[in-house]
Image (cartoon, rainbow, N blue to C red; front, side, top):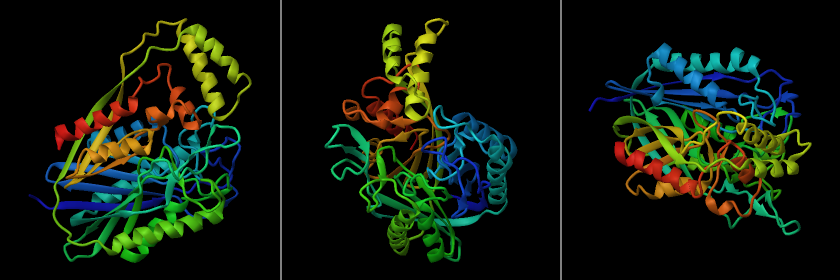
Length: 430
């Protein structure tokens, strides 16, 4: 087996002050830079096999933009786009690179002038500076996150708070790469949690995960990047009892995350050779038939006058359903979801363009006791939340986003379908 080669590079992608901070409302704008946003590229090569992992410290990346970036990376660097993962760390204190209905327009000037060019610069440097590496992995428990679907005792509704009894995956994973002399050259941290500790602040920041990666970099002397896992129902466990705060909570939680990650980095041992493998598949998730026209018209009454966020999204979706009956729209049996899988030995990273609920990731992980399967959310696009079936009856923000994302809704038990499709993909190829 040939040695695994790795090239890693980083660029600053901080936007100019005054732009929208994306993730809450379209009227939140930056007034200050707290810490620089970054894009970090990991280029892997072993024989004829190549793969590219990119971590961008933004909230979400519009699917069409991500697809265009992947295509252009393939054209320029000859790396198959099916072997590239572009992950958004999901800070809510960065520029609008998604432009979802109800959350403001995508910042085209930023994307064209800073975001995309810096991705290409980082990848170019990584590709040009590879070296043989060995890999080590360390796993442990971290209580940085907490289930955020809190049941209000007053209204009986699901709020974005803290639910200590709700599911979440506490596993944090550090993947480290060292050169032939044993010097650490790069680290990857995987964990699933929203980047919302800063709340509706006006400072540009990577949020809590930025402090964590900085601490591991200082400890190891090597570039470190965060790749967010299933975080759809997981928020930061901050001391105000909520999952949003202000800049002070970024430091509060960031210090805890840093301590956990550094402890894992200190346990890294037994660096060894690993085999690089990649695979791509279009997962098929069954769909329901679209909502009847009369039902959609009735549902629209609830969202009359809504102009932002999920209310605007739901209204526009229902209008699209109504309009579809005046076109040649035909119901499809399933929706195809692009998935890239990159394996580094027994560590398997699987992409999804959704903010998946933690139980979906846990179900996939539990199917492979002999592997470390790390599911990545918000990767190679942004397609909204992917909830578990048991969340539907209680409703809430994520459920509304899930139900009103497309003209045709996903089938019942779509969470099981997504998990099984991913499990089958990994079993077939690895």
